[in-house]
Image 1 (cartoon, rainbow, N blue to C red):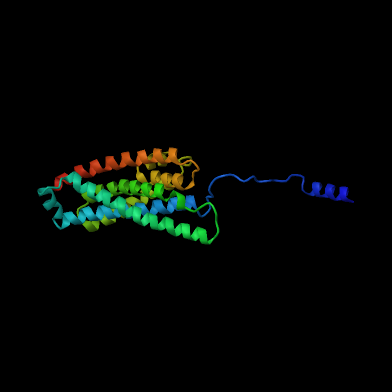
Image 2 (image 1 turned 60 degrees about the horizontal axis):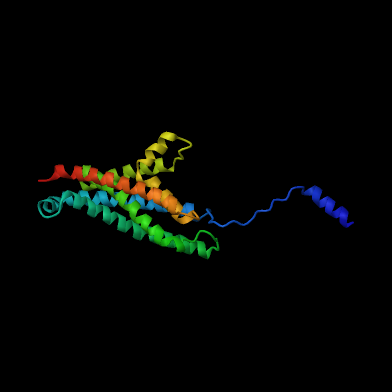
Length: 229
């Protein structure tokens, strides 16, 4: 009877799938979701903040007084970039902590960001600064603060949209997203939160963000100059 029972069981389930445990981090409601949430939050915040701040200073003639004084156009742009980076780090850290608390309370192991917070904060500063440079360029080109805020929102939407399109689906979108900070920020956050060995991905995307931030900062500095009194 025992032999027959085993035979029936083997016939009913001829193949048994056994999943071996692996060292890593889960993606469901954890690292990948956090990466896109942080990318969206930082993109809207940094770009709109830097654009509105620079345009508002020009509307109130603060920019002219600063340029006539000791501050150069490069220092003015750098101040907006640093402000965007710091504010992005604070808000992004709050988002990461909220995700971590929800994941911990829900007993979804593998998505807790606690051990990766220092690396994540550094990435938030860099991504926020790069996006702030884009916002500074928008603020320098816009005529007034209200226009700058509207243009910044209109700019950030296609930037985010291009970053969400996989390069395998549309190669041109991948090339365009590589020239903008959003996609690199999301990849950096994903590597910092998800990869078992994150240093290669973090270093690569950090280099991209630093280069893009420098390029947009130089363009914003050049765009500020025509508004000197």
